[in-house]
Structure formats: structure tokens, C-alpha cells
Amino acid sequence: MQVVADDGVRLKASRWGAGDAGTVLLLPDWLASGEGFLALVPPLTRESGAAVTLDLRGTGHSDRPDRGYGLERDAADAVLVVQHLADSPVRVMGHGYGALVALALAHRAPELVSHLLLVAPPVMVPADGPGRRALEEAIEDPRRLWDLVASGTSQALSPYILQALAEDMARTTQAAGRAQLDAMVRAPWAALVAGVGCPVAVATGESDFWSGPRHVRERMGVDPAVWRGVGHFVLAEAPDTVAAWCRRPEAAASGGAEAEPAEDGPPWAPEPP
Image 1: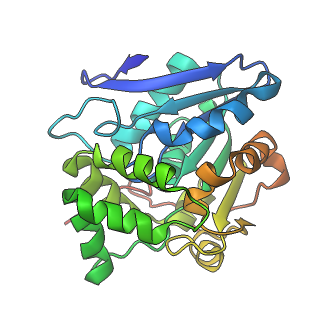
Image 2: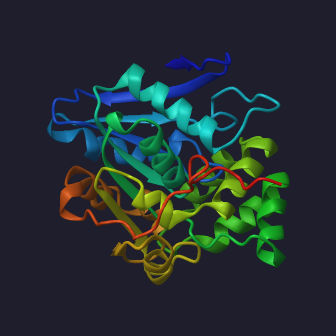
């Protein structure tokens, strides 16, 4: 299904399930699309639940405009998809970069969100140095992207799933990839969590390099649920575990840090030059 944004960009969104037991909006990771959640759809839609996936602009099968990317734009697109495809309020599960979009969505339209479920929030993305260069090179070169994905996976991930992940990520435009990367680098995680009015639950992998449990506690003020292995790939490896966590968010909800949002606008806005 296509949802058309106010600037004419067509967004690929999909809905599965009846929704009588509630709906989960699934927001994808950096460079990824809604296809990364397909293994999660069957367990989420059991017992009359519903799942909605979104390809953010510039990713997957959504339009790929030359400009107009950024966190605020992605959050506005997510609001539009909820309004079109779900009976709000919804549970919003954001994976990686999608965790940042989920937080921005909750700030932008709090009436649409009942719970935030943040998987492997990338609180330690490097702002400069070799790590940053490696991420930028991955945006521009599919071979470097393959190396980056392969180096971060756990050994349980099959070569077929690994190939599908890399091919999905390679569809993302360079402009969208850079905008997502910049947003992750400058995100004030603690202020974002503190400014949200709904329960927030965070889960990550014990071996995550961008979102390790200690870093999540320090950067977000939240005590995360910790999954074995790499949290970025638990959706492919253990979808039943993730679905069970999404169905009972109140069991893992945590309070935010004692931090204040920025006074001159939303806390994810870029600093003035």
C-alpha cells in the first residue's frame, strides 16, 4: 500500500492482522526497510494483533527524492502512516535508527502512541574518526556495506538472511543514509526519553557495539532488557522473543532520565551554525 506525504513522496507501508488486540508500528534501522520485520509479523499478528511496517523515504520501496530527508521528516511520515493504517494509540517499536524516529514521533504526536519499544538504540555512533569513515563508505559502496553487515552479525545468522539484509540496505539513497547517520550522531538520547509522556522500554544485545547495555544506561537513563548476542539481528534470529516483548511492553517499561529537552525547539533539532 502507498501513503502519500504532503510533499508528494509516496511511502510504502504494509499492514497485517486484525488489530483487535492492538497494533505495533515497526520502524526500521539505519539504511533498512520494513522488509527487515517480515519474520516478526507472524508472531505479532497471532491472537488478533496487528503489525504495520514502513519503508522510510529513500529506503526500500518508498520514493527516493533528491532532497527532503531528516529525522523530523521521517517522524512526520510515521505520523501519517499511523493515521492511515492503525487505530491509535499504537505501540511503536523502533529498531536502531527507527528508535530515534519512534522518539521523535512520540514528541510530535503523543496522542498516537501508547508505548515506545526501542531495540538496540544507536547511542554510540561515532561522530568522526575511522568508525565514522567506515559508515560513510558503506553508504556509498555496496561492497563496504556487505563487510560492515557481516562484521556485526552474530554467528547464528544464516548467509541467506545476511545477503537479504545487505541487499535491502543497499537500496537506500546516499542522501537518506547520510541524513539518518547525522541524526544518530547528534541525538540527545536522555532528553528525548525524558520528554516522552508514555512508557518506554528498551532492549539491546549483550554484544552490541553501538548500543551496549552500559552505554544505554549512561546515555538514555534507562535500564534495558538484555538479549543474548547482537540486538541488531535478534529480529531475524529470535522473532518470537521480540514479539513476546512487544506484546507485553508494560513488563519492561522503564522511566526516563532526569534531563530537560532543549528550550528552543524539539530536542532532536540540529544546533544552529
